[in-house]
Image: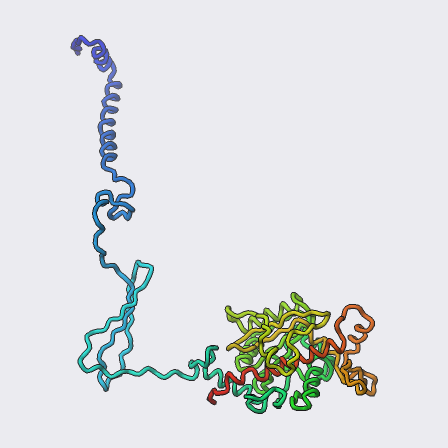
Amino acid sequence: MKIPHFNNPILQRIIERFSRSRDFTISFILHLLLVIIFGTTVVYKATQEPPDFEGGDSGSFVDQDKSNTPPPPDQPQETTQEFSVTTPVPNNAPPITAITTTSTTPLDFSMNTSVTPDMPKTPPKAVSSAAPTAATTAIGTSGMSVAAASNIKAFTGGWGKGSGSGQGLKQREFEFTAFLGQYAGGNWNSTVEGTHEPFTKGSLPNLLYYISKWSNGKIKTNERNVKAIKLDSDDLFTIKPPFIFMTGTRDFKLTDKEVENLRKYVQLGGAIWGDSSVPGLRSRFDIAFRREMRRVIPDKDKDFEALPKDHPIYTQNYYPEIRDVPAGMNYYKLPIYVLKIYGQIAIIYTANDYGDMWQFGLAEDPKTKKLVIDLRTNALEQHVAVNTYMWHIVCYGDYLHNVNAESLDPTYKFGTNIILHLLTRWEDQVSRAPKL
């Protein structure tokens, strides 16, 4: 092959190189083709790529082509619509209930639209709604239904004589029976003496005796017949005690049946009175009682609250001189804590260990007419109103304090005020409730 001659030496050299090397020539041509094909493609796409935030279907923020034009009118979108359709109802036809339709919607809200078709000149016969039942009709602002009020009235009606309207507590007569709450586990009888019923010595017997004696018999407490009542027993609903006295020093856990019974009991108008036999907070009984009572009243919006000083226990009471919480064992003076239903106390908790204070009975000295600790003994020379073991600790020990007649008397009066309030707290609220 004859190579033509060019005056340009560089071009002449390239042509000579191509002529001598077939591989070089092929490689050069292939590279040239690749550059032409792929190079032009990339350049073409780069010039056509849309800018960032372009509008349109991509859902971006800015539409470059329409940035200076007003937005298009709102387009109809799918929404959730709940509407009722009312049609004329013939006199002999059953009422037509509301029809509710729901469609899928991408929006974050729902729209309630009432659609009513054209009505005839003569309106259809109105369909009257059912009258509210006694179970749902509320009394006052407490949320109590008529049915609940009637049940409470029936459960609590036998405790006091007379309505109490315009009548002071000291002019009225009451009769009731109180019980120690016998719960599963724990030492529920820690503040009474003896293992056989009835209990005649200790906290509840002494308190009830004080109430009967100093009311001159107007308040009959059956103080010599104090017994225990099992919290899983239906006796709660047949005997109808105004309150159950629960005490102890240990941890405990109520059974499901006990919780169910106590919940029904307080809903009917009964009350649970917890008194820790270890003064102060964070004891084992304190923690257990608060925990288990939250199972009895499990409402999330309810918790133990301190009783305010304007509560009727302080302002409308049997002993008006008791206007504050009296100091308990070892001078503890914590507030009184309560859980309420329908605005009234359902559970009351005293953490000052009044129960052990009440293991020391009170009597009147016949000579001085002053109150003294009741140290009477029986034929066997046993104390009849004082825990002998605890009395020895008071006299010779060093860890029981505030045990004397001057300190005990306010606690007995305070206990009386609590009980009288529990006996009467529902009267005004349910007085007009019908019998169902």
